Image (cartoon, rainbow, N blue to C red; front, side, top):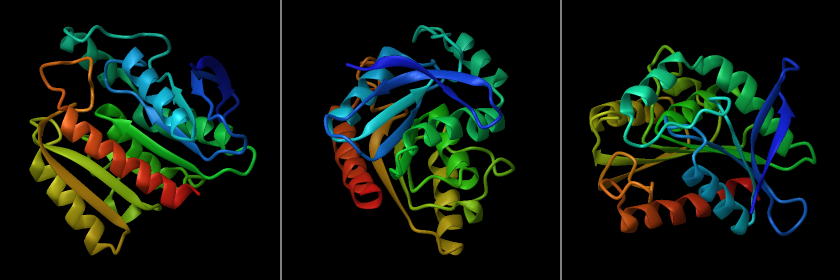
Length: 224
């Protein structure tokens, strides 16, 4: 459904990504951030699904063409560890946001796992954003503090998550509330990466569909 494109970062460098446009013109935009596996077919599928829901959606390729097979967690961890999160967020992701907002559209940001952490950083560092939806990823506090979040935020987290743990989620949510931020967090009796239908061991269809419907309502409210 979508197509691979290139777009400019604020520093003038080129980045690439997967773009899927809504059927109607002048649609609001959503930037989609990959898991630690890279710009997989599953992430492209979610980007297509956003387009079908009425959003122009763009998934930037933060690994520059590398996609790690699901079984190779060591390689995925190596790719994630070598990623400059600040450069990826303030340059590549911000460039994607600017690409979708060029006709005056409001733009939201969402991401999964690694992309969830990038989404939180983006909610603090990308001034052109209007909303953020986070899936099971929160960055270290030195990268993004709850008090620095600048846009309405919705979060979706798994109670059986040993990476983005319930304790981390609770602390971040408490920080958002203490700072008076507009945020709502949802928890699911599921495992990390429960939205990824290509990973049968962790996919939870009921939780994934509930989280998706909540996300669409949230973006519909804040991007219209």
